[in-house]
Structures are given as C-alpha cells and as structure tokens.
Length: 509
Image (tube, rainbow, N blue to C red):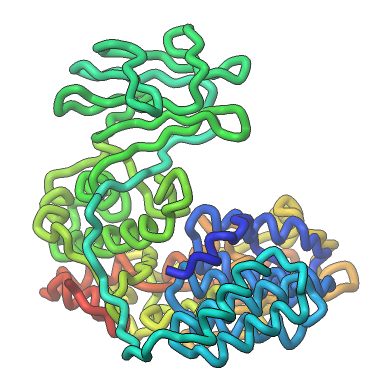
C-alpha cells in the first residue's frame, strides 16, 4: 500500500460546467464524496473542476486528487501515473506538481522501475529544494541508486481480513439519544473503563462540550456501549446487533457508529436494498455484491472512524429491525463469498434498473473501472415499471437548480447534446437568459429531482413551459441492476450467473 496517499486531504463535490462557477464549493463537494467513500462520484466531481475551473491551481489540485484516488482507492496505478503526468506537464509551476513528481516516484519504485523513480525524486529535489517531502525524497534517491535484486512483479492477491467487523455510521449530528435493551449492557470509555455498571437503559446528551450519561458529565469524547449478553441494543427505538460507539464530532454534536461482524451487518443491508420476497438467487447476488462493497470500503477506510454509512451514500442499512428470514438465508448461504478482479476486491456498484443497457462508470463519472462496463441487459427491460414518462415545468427546473447553488436565468430551452453508446444523456445544454450552460446528464438528474428523473436513459422534447421526458430504468445504471437480477433469478439463473453478467471479468471466490 503506497503510504504517501494517506496524506490526501478528504474534501469533495460535483462541479457544474459553464454555469456561474464556484470552484471552492465544487472542491468542497468533491472532497465530501471522497470522505464518504463515493470514489467514482469523487473522480467525476474532480474531473468537472479540472475541465471547467478558470483557476489553474484548482485544475492542478483536482487532477492530482484524481491520481491519488486511482492509486489508493481504485487500485489503478497506471491511471494514477497518467493523471500525475498531466499535472506535471500542464501545471508545472503549480504547487501540486511537487506532489505529482513525488507520488509518481513512489509508484514507479513499487513497480520496480527504479531508473524512472530515481528521475522523479531527483526532479522533485531540483525543482522543490524546500519541499515538505525533501528528506524522504533524498532517502528514496539513495534507495533507487542501490535497488534490491529485481523480482518478478506479482499480481496482488486478496487475503481474507483477520477481523471481519465493519464500522457503520448509523446516526450523525444529534445532541441526545437513548439506548435500552432487554438485557444488560455497559457504557465504557475509550480505554475500556466501565462508566455505568450493568444497566438496561442509558440516556446520553451533549452539553457544554461534554458528553453526559444520565445527566452526569463524563469528560470523554468517545464511549462504547457493549451488550453483556447476546441481545440487541435499541438506539432511539431501532435495534442493532453488536456494539455502539458514541463519538463527539468536531461539530460539537454526536455521531453513533455500529460495530458488528460483516455477516450480521449484511442481515440489515440485503432486505433494505432488495425485497426479501424476491427469488433467493437474486438475494444471494445482492448479498455478495453488498459484502464485497463493504469489505472494499473497510480496506480503504483505515484512517477514518467508520467504514460505511447507513444510507445510499454507501448502501442502505436498517439494523436488526430490518431483518427477514429469506434475506438472512441468502447471507448465510453465501457467507464469505466476494467478487475479485485481478486478485483484489471489486468496487461493486449497483442500481435499481438499467432500462435495458448498463452504463460504463467512465460515462457517468469519468472514472475508468475495468469491470464496470456497459452490458446489454434485456432482463431489466422486462421488469415492471421499467419505462416512465415525466413532464417538468421549466420554472421548477430553474428553481431546483438554483437551490443547488447554480445561477440559472429564465430558461428558454433544454436539450441533450451528448448521448453515450448505451443511449444515456451524458451532457445537457440549458439556454437561459441569453446564455448557454452545460451540465452532465447525471448532474441534471440529481440536481433536478432524482425521484422523478429516474435515470439518464431518456429522450427529451420541449413544449412551451414544459419539458417532456420519456425514459427507462432507475438509477445511475452502473454495475448490477437489481431488477435485472430479479428477472434473471426468476428465469432460472444462479447468483453466479447474475454477478458475472453485470460485473465484467470478475472472479467469485
């Protein structure tokens, strides 16, 4: 694992091409995607900044971030080197070119390309003699000058984690909570010291900067609620397996993180992502995709307080109260099964319905992921509710976009200007107030109303003050279609068939 990328500052957001452009807000939005583990969305948001921002420093910073994401979060060092090369060639005078040289050197060293690595580190010292990584660069020059004996580069291999717990951010930004159980539990501090004795209920609040337990200030920033028997903990009425970590956030309120084993976590995910009444093979496919996603995020979240979020920012998790017998069976019968690509865990994105053709990740977020390719998907087209129609008032579109921080004048016309091979709208031009502005199709959908504009697989016509859409599918269209999995299972396909259909070139292990 390349350590230098741990210096990434996690911030995020999606830029909106050609509209009144706030580069700082766009960068904050892009960084927010990255913090929440939405790596592909982060790449897309940073790429928007690199394409649209008038500030060369912002462009360089965004491009460097994309390289860092490819290197550390997407396991693609070749793409990382491409992005670092862009920073070096196009923004040589930028402060971010220094990191591009250094990061390139580290990747090249790990790939046993010692002469190239040596050149990067020497260039770093020559151009940035007072750079923050000067001492490390000097050390790496000595190391590259006396490289170890050449060894054959081996493909990375997936190793099962020793600790199969996952940390789920279930509640954030609250000032009071109550925990109770049918059995006893303890409230402990971060060092394991008992703060409560054996209790069946506890009220926690934050006041004056301190967490209070049943009204008593503890002067602790972190607490752990541990069940003393095999019973669920009820957090504000919602039951959870495992432990609950209570943490004071930098905002001065409380976050709650549920820590439990991966399989128990999946009990609360699968029935929230897919109806437990659906065929068992579809539920098994969902369980494996969700398990792979969770373990992928866990591997990339070692420096964060949590691995996944209990919302669509990761995958929806409803705790023990969401469990159902059939979805639990799907989890149990696939225990430990994951999807690998080139020996490593795959980033298994999924969505509701592809509309008949899935989409490449690069078409939605500019992120190149080799197993997230477009595939023909006749199964999704057979699903109920695949086709949809919608009429939108142009004033409502304008209001929705402006609420998202854009600057849209009176709209005269909206029209697609770029269509992907799968038929999805990738760019939309808005004619407004004498100006022309362009959004990505995904930005238009999300910023207008994703509950109505269900996907970007649509055609559009303008009629007076109304825009008429006729579309298919629901969601971003990348990875596994859940409704497609349903139809495939109903037609007799196995969970392995389903997963191999939607994720190109993966290995089920």
